[in-house]
Length: 166
Image 1 (cartoon, helix red, strand yellow):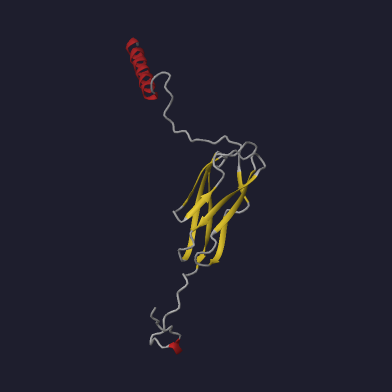
Image 2 (image 1 turned 135 degrees about the vertical axis):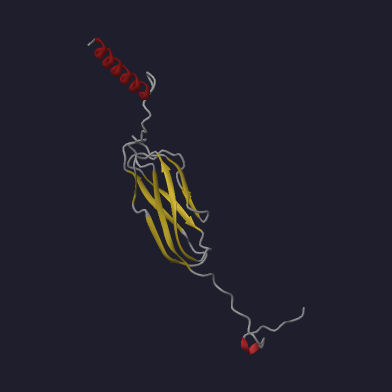
């Protein structure tokens, strides 16, 4: 009987010892992944987060101002804003606290010397409840204007300008 009790006791103790070893050292936190949760009460709310320019003339105005409001209860601070490529440049209130209820703009300029259709984004990082926001511009840039061709036969009646010596 004593042998059975000793054997069972040894088995229980070794099970407890193995479980304690796999749990980690005393005082050590378990290695369970923890997701970062934003506790900020600032919030960036845009009137619209997509702007369609439609058709723009070559080298025309490719600038649009996205209006947004801090709809939260704490100051909002934009730490960065980046265009999806070098042809899209955002201008924003850099590291300036935007008070709750205050409205501001992020100006986005697209290089309209690039003919064809485009869809570009700007990623905005801030201390808001949603720390990254993406806004989008899109449209079509017309082809570059072409210069009028010189008449093939060079005759004045065809629009040619005679060459004069100076």
